[in-house]
View (tube, helix red, strand yellow):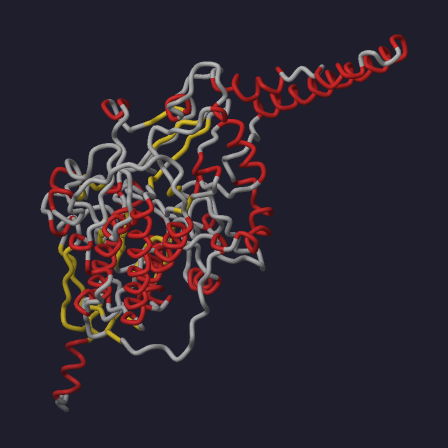
Amino acid sequence: MKLLSSSSLLLLLNNISTTDGQSYVAVPQRTFVDDAGTTHTSRKAAPTIICSARTALSFHHQFQANPAQFSGTYGNFFPRGSLGNMNDPDYEPYWPTDPTQNELAFLDAIPTFSPSCYHAKNSKCDEFDVKAAQDADPDKWVYIDNGSWHTGKAMKDITEVMRNIPIFISTHYEGNKNPGCVTYNKDTATYTTDTTKCTARSLLDVIKRTNELATFLGITKIDIAKDQQEFCDASSVLTDAALSAQTRGIRVMTVNPSINENNAVTLYFADPLSDPFLRSYEELGVPLIHPGKHPSTQVGSEKITSHEWFTDCTEGVMFRNCNSAAYYPVDLYLVEGRRFFFNTPEEKYFLETFFPDKALLSNQIAHWPLNDGPISYTSATRSFSELARKLNEAVRLYDSTQCVTADVTSTPFLNAAFGGLKGGDYACYNKNTLQSDYTNCNAADLAGGVQMITTNSVVKEPEFKPLVSNPVASQKTIEKQNQKTMWTTDRKVDDTAVFTAAVAFIFVISITVILGVVSCIFYCCCWKDSVSTGVDKTAAGAVDEGTFTNAPAGEGDLPSIA
């Protein structure tokens, strides 16, 4: 009998067979502990994965991942509320987190379990073909998310067939550093968070964890050092803009407006500790106002009605005549996609008529990707650059207010349950307490790995410039997609009111003119001067004021975080 050589024997021992008869070349076992405390192992060089489309884009940005390693994706391709359309030959990214044509081609090369999620939507796309995901037979489910989306029955049905639970990286909390912060229930396939044990997570924190995960998954890290350097450069630009903004007295705040069928506006807000983008902005010195001053926070999410927002207004006075002061003196808003303001004539009319906030009227607003888009050096670079532009352009609109001294990187400040600032406060710019990891590139953040490739690609990437940074160039896109905006009077009750007011106005004008002509004939034009003052504008005035009192303030309210 012929004996096997030592090299052949080694190859045979390393050729592992799976339970379904497939084989793969094994590598030394790797481990990864996720944010729910679960230890995952793999001996495959490149295990196949399923993940959300935004996670796949994160891997594409960060590592130029091979589409072949993805068994499939699910969820939205575009940020919610985006103007994007994959079938539009003229499509260009409008927001910093919108995918480019190249990035859409990458997603298109991967099977999707959510066919209707290809195009931009105003809401989270929940479509999930569970059977297709099961048949794809992935090795790992990579779940980089908020811990609530796409969990439950669909996750349980898929993971039971996979015989593997998801690899969870939280986009909100430092679960890996705080035992008990996040736990996973295998029976229900859901995650539970104890915020008293959690500290808030920034973009940089999520990116570092993703780099560690890529090493575990065997994803080649092409050009990652170059991407990191671009991120550090953009961080420097943003922190300089933040210092300038603080010097000029600029204040920034998130807002999630809700508009009911009577065009009454209710405002909701997000805690900067609840979102990785907001955390990073604050760590770089952006003057973010913390919510929580309003009495509504004692019973739930803070919400402020229009009547409360314009603090100088009294009963019977139109908001446009008393908008010099606001509940929070916000000079620049951060607004997520579903409630974004595109500064169209229709939207301007709505604001002037129903909610004449000075910052909105001045278009001092920037897109905030709440639970949307990839999280990577590339994505952060784009968002930092756009926010820096908006900060540099912003003008202070209200009286100066005093910032408070706070270490926004300290553990007490970052505690998810008890940290942060009092409602209405924002942290002063203090170079000594800024997070220096943003501006000082550290190779250790890349998490190494045998797949590490730091040489720059010879192919020059096209410059990324979102259309939102060029209003003139973006006008064509906005005109095609204007029906998406929430800041217009396109509801049935509003159309009726506006139509009635218009008819009444025309009728009054017509009667006045007729009476004037008749008067001229009979009285030799002695009433000529009175005609110009005979127009009754009460009908038009009712559109301004009456619509704010026809329904309960809370009707139609939307949640602050979704």
